[in-house]
Image (cartoon, rainbow, N blue to C red; front, side, top):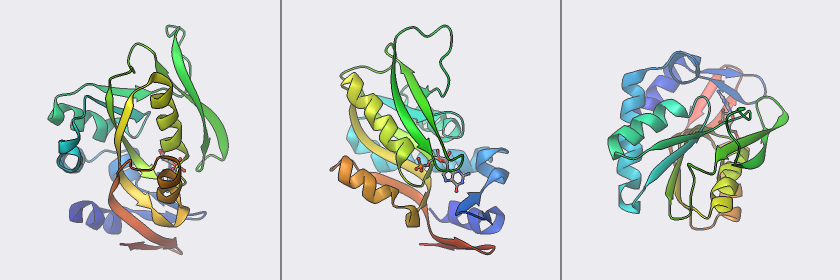
Length: 190
Ligand code: 5GP
């Protein structure tokens, strides 16, 4: 998506360790207009799949997910990274964080993820694919159908897409901007 690519080139920063900093419009300050345009693109890409619910993970996936949910007129559920005292029955999956280099649990209440749901997963980044596979695990536990995955930014050099294709054959993966290389203040996009 051209607008997102231009914004990454203008305001993104390449940090050591293959991290792309986009705090200016995705991860801290949010460009609500750009996020809305990204949501429109997700809805267009997955419109034919009969989505009944959008799933994301806190925190940075929530903005594009809720805007896509608004446009598609479907509920949005975000997986939590800590167990709230008020949540008694939930599905849980373990995820390894690439940016923080540690494992964490993601949880969704059994009340909000059910067999019969047709789930579109939306997140800010696809890197190694661990968060995405954790979300797919939650969907499988619930007996929900994962109809696709949409990412704002994919880092193609970290192998997430191949990992998803190997573990979830047939699940379409769409990324609005694909970073092919990062380094020394340089950002290369597909
Ligand atoms: P994965 O599980 O695919 O390795 O990583 C996905 C998660 O890690 C995303 O939800 C995102 O929060 C975070 N992440 C991975 N790489 C980056 C990056 O380069 N920049 C930022 N801001 N977040 C990232």
